[in-house]
Image (cartoon, rainbow, N blue to C red):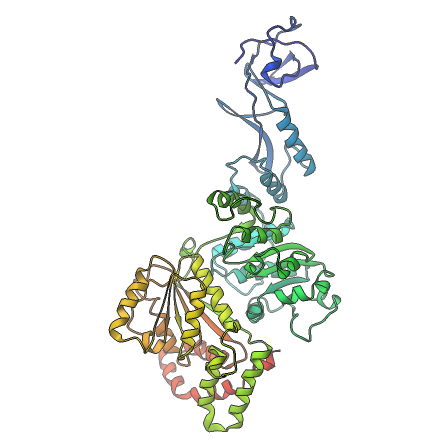
Length: 610
């Protein structure tokens, strides 16, 4: 510190504020201590200030003001943080602090390029860009700013026919903010927390506000689920399915709908059509399908003209941090560079840096964090579509059964249920290596369970399907994989149960419900997957109770996989109907329901859904 230096009048008089009083001081521009030269000529005036020879490093701070987040200059000193009246110097009390002109020029240029100035209320886009460039304080509180920006009345989602949990309502508020700012976001809630409903709440609000032409891109296996969920929660929305050989090749045909549903491969193949439509909100479901930045489908979805981008995924990172940067390139182009350059994409330091940057554009809640809002058990229904080739095979089996006469109905029913488990169980010509929609859905669920170090029970009814499920479980990377079926001696089952419950890693037991559906305590599991629905609902409920039972300390998610337009849809309807009946009525239904249900199961066809 240099005491009581005076300096010559060189660049004019500076007006400074000192404890509310104006004082005139003569000065030359002092930027570093080398200009404070003891041999300088006698000054023409004295200021009486104490001059510090340490440069301040001004930074931007976002303050929480009534009108919104506002930019301020601040500088840390040995006695706290100072607000800067001017950008090039600071006087407080009797102390004068020089600042770094290069740093100041850099930040001012950044503000100018964003159309910002000190004292401005900052948009989310401005905050994101300042954050990315490193101009905001390191301890910048993302949640505080996000909550401040959310302190508005969001567009109403009252017309959605649902009662969202509090965390889902908060998710909708966040997505409303993103839409208001014409930005993008990653909805990364854990599996089972209702991401689809939150996305539909946003879409419904957009349609209600007059913003049509919204696009949902999903794996082919999930299009049926989107059709059902949209009809269930927002039946007034006009939905158009763009897929299959008969789809339109005219862009104008896509524009006059509230929502267009399509697949990743269809977007890639029809990109010339899709880029001629000005989309409002583009939603990618299971967005990890575009994690590889250089693939055809990833490049295609990033070319879509859109106002708002929404990536929905329970596994934002499956392999490396590059997965997340690829998603970011979709939701907010230019915010992060795709790939991490020479940085190790698996390193903790890189993960911490990326987490800081991605936090403002991603909302992610874990089951454990919102457990107080949840029931003890979540039933998640996963309707699937067979696809053209499998539908043809299914239809041949069904028609053969009908042609064989009434007496073969039950046998045909079993054969159709086996086909839905895995076609190779009834069709020797079906390749064992072909991933069916149900196997792909199973893999996706298991991969997310692995990412969360969860434990899962997979129930499947037929001999042969267990082998297929085991192979999928192993390929998904679960640490412990085994089975309990009729081939496992009763004496050997408890050791398998203990090994599953005590496994320190993700674990999977594949179980035949007749062998392991009762009497086993598998409370280590927090997921149950019914690979095929059971004709007898009591058998299915008993199987679920292996994990969901008294003493279970975790929320249990029960996944029901079934094909639309098949015997499995009838079985699911039967299951839900019987759950609605009282115990007395259930007993009556058990006696009366089988033959009508068998007849309906044999009459329903996947071909009628096309």
